[in-house]
Image 1 (cartoon, rainbow, N blue to C red):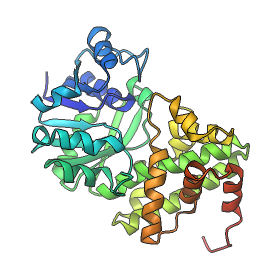
Image 2 (cartoon, rainbow, N blue to C red):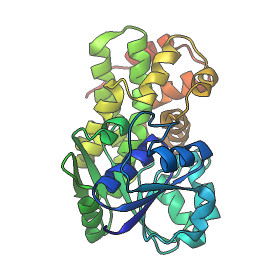
Image 3 (cartoon, rainbow, N blue to C red):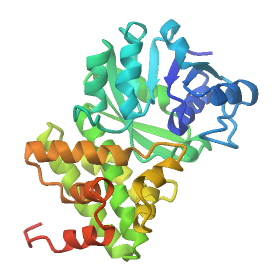
Image 4 (spheres, rainbow, N blue to C red):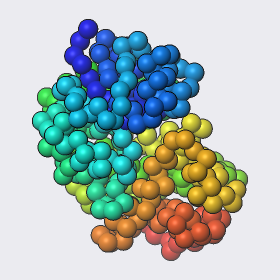
Length: 328
């Protein structure tokens, strides 16, 4: 048995990463908020709420969030939903102090407009890295081939996590562009909502391709303004993750867009989901940030207006098509 690793957050993605690491021989403790998940993992090697029917590695055990304060693991995978991350980190800042934490959460905090790594850095004094890329949790848990990016300003740390996660069906590339990797992972969820709306309205493949391409343009625009490298968005955590999330039926954010196109209210859509679609919240945070910083993000703006101002989805798509003509 190799090093012990903790995974905090037992949604589908946290659970899939826990099982991946367990299959590589690591002793993994999965910290879960839900009692049903703890019981399912402990008794049946299964997460009955978020990865039902998929057997996890026998090296994965489960504990309660209440046990985080007594954790002994040095290496931690952070998979707590964005809008709850600050609260969990502040409540356990002593236990997290000095740890080596890799963030698997994608999003922007609504209250502050800050990326997850910024938020956590304020809440707990630890070393932080990022993992992101085109990776549906279910497919990772089933051992299907996947490639992702690992980012850290400390290249040795990035290489350690790269080697730790890499497995026969899970390939990692590393980069120092932490900001770019995190922005790509966050904003692609907003564009995926837009793609779902377009598909739900029956606008076809041309429209979807246009949204993906122009979505990448505004993701890059935001990222460069925040200090990221433009080329990062051509990689796995940019274009790769964007294409997957905009086109794959396992995408929760795309499913939100499809339902919005059918005329369902956002409260009704999210109320029926047992997992969080981060794009719903990231749209609000990104729109506020772009407005304040003067960054043009027309697709994000329209997604925000559909979700939070009840704008007709069809009108939002047409508003994008009728914008003033310009050079690409």
